[in-house]
Amino acid sequence: MAVEDHRKLARRRFERLKRAHFRLEGRDERIANALKALEEATENYPLDAETVRWIAEDKDIEDA
Image (cartoon, rainbow, N blue to C red; front, side):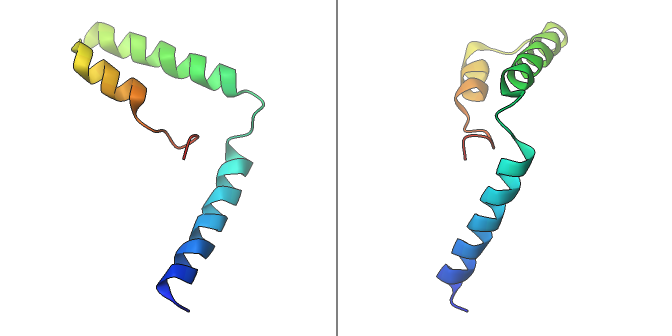
């Protein structure tokens, strides 16, 4: 199997697993929980604006 074929197969498997795990139902709640956790973490560990921007703009697994 060529490397490119292996990568395509792996990507398809990953996409299938991602869709099964990260369903659209509950997405808003997951995001809200993540934002709450980030807010709580920054109370204890202040982050500068550049770091917060990097976190917010980072491509997460749901967007991959």
